[in-house]
Image (tube, rainbow, N blue to C red; front, top):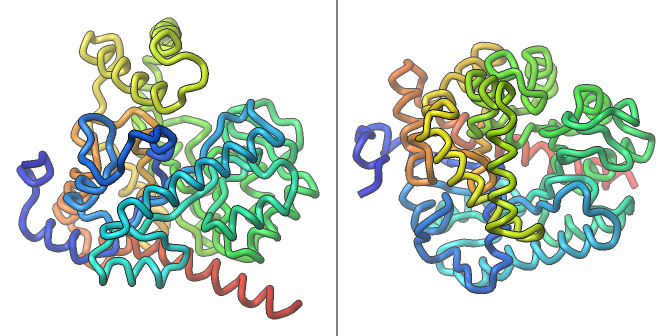
Length: 388
């Protein structure tokens, strides 16, 4: 019996399981690079596998294609392709329960068939190797969003967590956004600098989303969005997908990290010792375990899952329920207590019902808003290609 099943009303469970429930950002792809890993088997660690996704009512999930920003050029392209292939392999291996989806309609069809829709997003524009041909190849392989940067600048866009060198998007960066519009690939502005966000907003003809960002007004992290950015994103049809990482949810947690940098330094050293330099899946898993140990030892504050609801509610009060969604960062970040894995998603539904949200608005937040952005990206792509 999962924690979610123990604490959630029948009404909330029914609403969750009858809704389209989308998660726009998940890092389980790193684990798929291990040939022994099987998404179809309930894992003892991590947050995502098919049994737990089914138990939590998840309809569709964007698996992140992610390489650290420091890896660039042909090597980054090669590694991205290997991750795309790994997602395809897991879908093939578990084809009775999961299906690759590239359109909003395919997500709905998967739901009707009782299958989970697997989607892909490339997390960092450095993986196209400054070549639009690679972007086109990624799109042809099923990629449906690209985050313009990761934690470091790439050669054509500034990141939110690096020293700006481009003043936002370069001319080539603007061409990348235009090409994404043509391909029906959603422009994802999580991780980008504020100036890059506004440059992309000005260029993109399709609505954009932040695949995994929270509200800066509640937690002052540069990775989060200001109230004005959330309003401007929504004004052009976009969606902020709330990130569950404790360091983006809780100002108290962020302050504690800043106050004593030695805590994260020691965690980093221990992770390197356990995992080596090039095992990202191990680094993510062990980093989470060690952070929880630091919380248990009283070195870092405990962050509860209800902070997710606080961020959702803040964004809804700013821009309405049409522009807010869920982008967990499962298997790639430190989850709050009570939202350790996908089985716990119905607790979000329960909390929103208790706050007085209508069933219609909850359905939007759970996934309908994400499908709307996908549909709009598809429509813009058709229109742009018809003009050729």
